Image 1 (cartoon, rainbow, N blue to C red):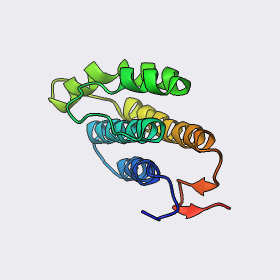
Image 2 (image 1 turned 135 degrees about the horizontal axis):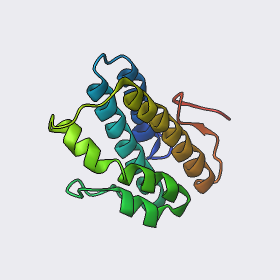
Image 3 (image 1 turned 60 degrees about the vertical axis):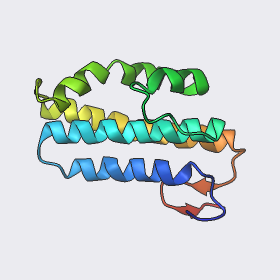
Length: 138
């Protein structure tokens, strides 16, 4: 972590890397689950930016906490909360996922990472950090 960047930046940068890596996965279930991991990490980055604390590891569903902590991301939280049952079924191998569904979730994960960056930069006062590239924009 760069000493000048906010504490949330490495997490959202990692989340974006996970989205890119997921694009390289052949199996739709793998892409879907990787996208889910990326959005959970980005949610943690948002909560960390807002509160200075991480989402508790043992919290089964981070989305209600995100919605209450960062209301500006509430619609995203509701969307991803609605995918949790499906995520668990796919992870357990009880449900198949199509290429289209996996790719749609990846696009949404990328959009969510962007929304987290936009929100966190506004919350931090627009300090000019480029969380997507890992360098200062200013």
